[in-house]
Image (cartoon, rainbow, N blue to C red):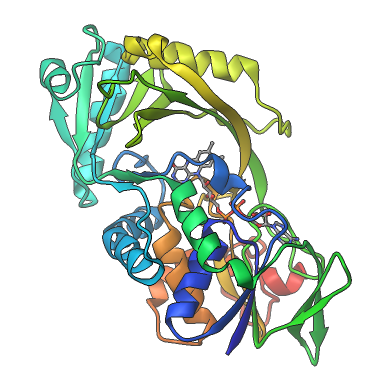
Length: 381
Ligand SMILES: Cc1cc2nc3c(=O)[nH]c(=O)nc-3n(C[C@H](O)[C@H](O)[C@H](O)COP(=O)(O)OP(=O)(O)OC[C@H]3O[C@@H](n4cnc5c(N)ncnc54)[C@H](O)[C@@H]3O)c2cc1C
């Protein structure tokens, strides 16, 4: 089977990898592989620390994908000869003020009830784990199973592996015949046919595809270099400072990713006010960041959906969607790529998981249980 995958961010590439290892022939099409949202992502694999009230089925998907990560990394290494920068360093969630501590502790019971590891620590115990934490933090929770990966290492390795199978062009439209998608047309007018087409274009919508409930949720994020001789921090540190979230993710080379804002102002440029707030809040938790040097500042849009769950589903006989991964696309890559590959191959899969991410869940109000009513996808095509 020949599968054409439009979009080579972490989702398109992971899906290509999954299908390749299952024996499919794959072609990827993307003018800027790995330079969308995946370029900005911090790569936190943090189902426990990301837990909030009212996320519905999302918890289970995040937990399932996190459990698959070690094997996902192992398989990439076995097939490509290169190992992504996956670090099992756990996550410390730290509260600056007493009110922040209350918000943090409120969540622990929920996290544990969902099967995630979350343990309340005294500030002194947190500082023993991370001596660079400020002496006046008011509380901490250790999420022992929340780790991290550098998403750039994943996209670089997979883009290298598929180098001769990536067409560096934009897809302008989908081509139908006999009621199904059979091919795509690129910006140079080239027609690329496939037995199956996968749309993994993140936020971007392609002419001929159903209109999807996607919106840009911009994030500003910076990368800095810690002191040469000793890493400043070793755990991923997520913090709440005056109810505002901030995180610091240490990489193997001593660099630290500091993020991230969340804004829906339609402005793709880096926002100075947001950067200032992030730096200020991070300094409140880890004062030593003032000795770091700046490597990079970047803003990208997360492909947001109304319920933060991705949109993965079959549209017609020839087209499968895999997009809308919101703020969890790196964590969800093992889950999303496997489910997308199952749908492409019409293979058995977990029906409850597929329902949780089915784009058809956004049917018009009151029509959900009426089989004769057109689905979201049919209505919006
Ligand atoms: C600041 C920030 C921090 C984040 N941190 C985390 C984190 O810690 N953990 C986590 O799990 N997630 C995180 N995310 C979310 C994560 O980055 C996204 O969910 C994920 O990258 C989505 O991957 P994708 O492949 O769907 O999209 P993208 O990476 O955006 O890739 C889509 C690709 O499609 C291509 N494309 C678009 N249109 C076309 C077309 N017409 N033809 C051909 N190609 C096309 C684009 O060029 C692009 O390369 C973060 C996001 C941001 C912005």
